Image 1: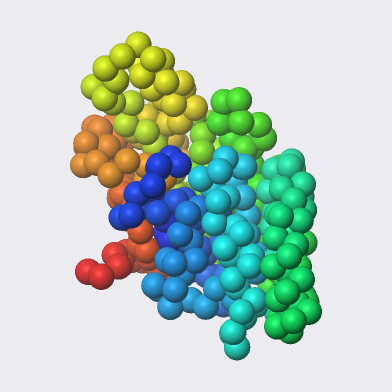
Image 2 (image 1 turned 90 degrees about the horizontal axis):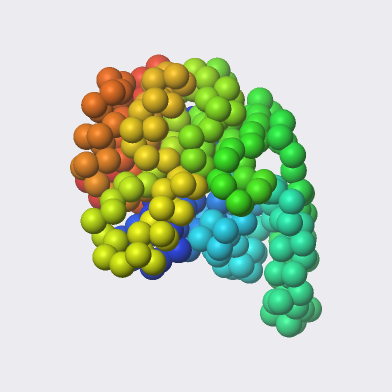
Length: 283
């Protein structure tokens, strides 16, 4: 299995170094995408994967920073000789089908022009979407995707995912505060990719900012809390993504967690086999 953290950024703010949350998994030449944040298609181009190859997307939840790249993926992928010739298939929490239906209506003019005048693939310009519940949501040629509920505060439902292939496994937390269900479903994975927040109150200079920060901290996971999760899940590698860039984040985790832990940056690749190798883009 190969995992590429296309976008490692935290939150909806624009960051040109760290794009929006999006993780690609390549298992037996099957490519699947988890979340589609800002700039996902740009990162795919940078790592040399034709976006027409990406026709299966799994959403953790419907916050804008996790889905804002979907129109680009949907509308751009069918173009050119390597363009998508099959429908874009999207799995996600309740509301996913409605969102994708409205997306097609929003771009109806463009879709009609591409289909009727420019002769793009009709199938490639279509969408098949699924509102999912907890459990196995996809299985094909030995690749299995299991959705599990996590706790993202008032954002309900929100999912994490466990991906299994050829005796290896990866779990993705999505956005969540500490979740017992995640601990249950992520047990013994090779790689656990988890979100985090720093909980840094020094940035809050007003009561309003402190209240906002308290809310954010209450729906995400602090590194001390993540360390406890890692100790219970026992992954071969723990990775922070959709988290602040901070040596402090790692240092706080290592106070109580002795296992291997890394912070992600954009286009970081994780190769999972007998050993787990990390390659950072451009290094």
